[in-house]
Image (cartoon, rainbow, N blue to C red; front, top):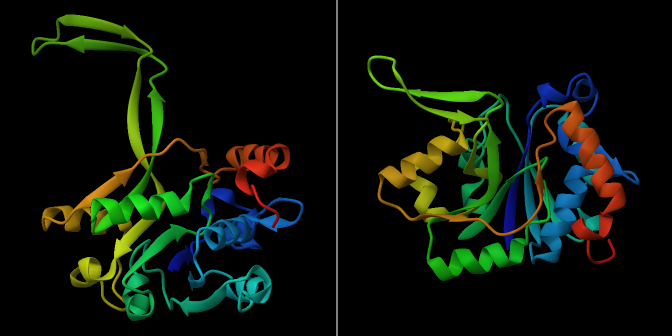
Length: 240
């Protein structure tokens, strides 16, 4: 099983840290970068080969991970001359990725069971499977409902709405995405998913019970470090 990891972003929301380090190298604790944790999780799920799509400060990623032997996976690198979006790099590695393969963001921090996601993908015969997280979006104000003449018809105090959000992890069938990607062509993953749905392909949303953290902002990153230090076994249940 193979995986493509998008590790080329600049991580501007985490500045100034990411001026010196690529975001996937940001440490969680005990010297372990978030990308190393992800690689260990993928290896435990049966992934043996990983392609890192790199750009920003890529030499630091190469220096740290090398060929992946230390982590028990084979790592190769695909260098973008310019940013290609969250799906565009697939165009250059499609033939090497395998018949079906994981695609993840390089800063993914989750307890998602990747092996279970693969089983769901195969059982549903999906062309693509999106790892999804149930999140409540809270409105911090009283919500007014009105009719066309602006007469109030309802008043909801600080409502919450449940949504499914993408975790930044996907399982893709190579032949299903082939019509939509090309080497050097910019493409974001939401546009790829919309194009597949418009073409009548089966895009499955997998929403298991798990933890997922967005570490894009300094406060969220600090919270992720604390969670990892206090609950390391949740993310890495086996020695690693």
